[in-house]
Image (tube, rainbow, N blue to C red; front, side, top):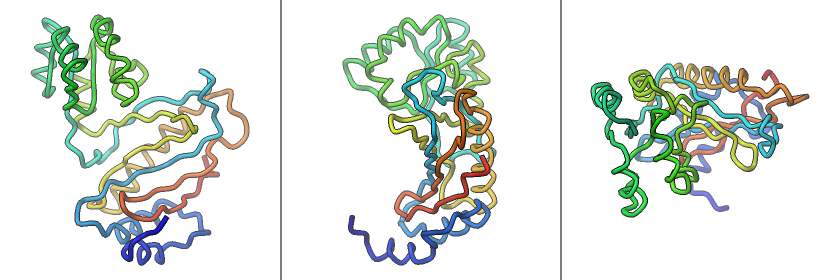
Length: 229
């Protein structure tokens, strides 16, 4: 793959064979973010889990101390008092069965996270083929199927992110923006890694995390120390 001049210049700042601590990598991320927009910082974690086995699937959520730097649009499936509660808590969209054809037939997807009360999961289940592949399906493990819609909305708006294994047994998670300070980047990373560490399946033996890299949207990857997890 051919890279541009800015990318190649940025890559020279990074030692390709070195495994960095996040405190060293965070300032480098800021230096290597050369795009005209505020680049997202993403962590990629390669695990030794086998996601095909239910007892090795990793999935959960964590509230990043400094948020993600992104305004998150929340859709809540709820009715009656819970619908009113969701509106009061600041949900961007609230509805019930009437939203199913809007998403199914009109392709409406102007939201980033979906929360549902348990009694609405029958309706939401009809949208599995649309929401599932986009990672938008509400899930009790991620705290998005709940009766406490106020807490769910507040946490999401404060910077709660979901993490899960993909088909290659890698976890991809955005943890902030290039405009964050190096300390904010490190804080968010450490909060994520603490959650990933706690999520280790008991059936996984040996080294849990094989490799970790971090990069801005347009910048080169930086390899991080993984063997301490």
